[in-house]
Image (cartoon, rainbow, N blue to C red; front, side, top):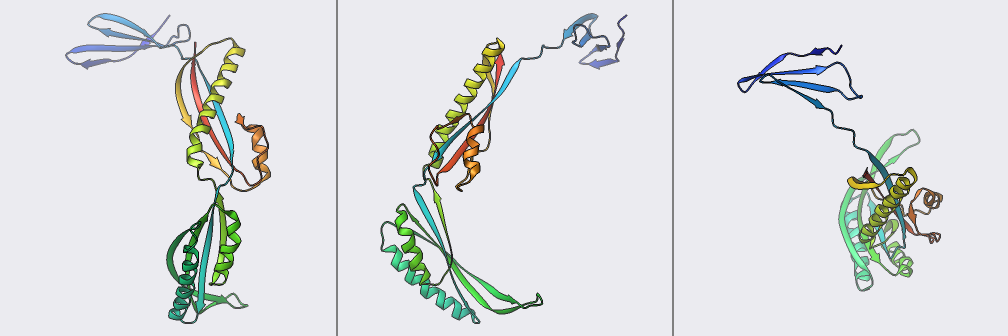
Length: 253
């Protein structure tokens, strides 16, 4: 025998009694509502059938521009002397670089810091001051990089780093995203055909974070095995891999 439980509840001028059946019929819980002496039975909605697939696409971008990050520094027991020496070298370097129309020169702010040295016992003491400034030089002609670094070396170069990148990285994201969506669609269709069901409408679409790595590593090549859409040719040396992934939920008919 089916038992019911519940408590009367008042609302909007009439007594509303709700009861939840302890018995399950066809695996679905049932609810009974008594309104004005009439009983109504409501069945839980059937579970929607869906399939979730992911798609990943990858493209190799060839760098077309380089940023030469130059840090000039001057050290001296006197901060004014360190600053004057840095300013002289910085001014001369900027004048040399800016006459070359193939270079885009960006000047950063001058920074000041104390200069400490440590003795053999691990104790540090002040020995002077450091004045430094960063200059970024962008060029599409990679053959000019050694000349730029050489000019900076004669003007107080303290540190240098060269970053290669692709200027069309953002624009290429749209194409890679489309490839990832197409890969997800193809994967969902293949799974549906195998299982003998039909794909319905798209329920949700979510995009994962895009990733890129300018370093030349074995992982860059091994990643081809876990990518749904990727060029068949090997990646050229120094290429920048751009990977995007999506997740799509389809209804099943």
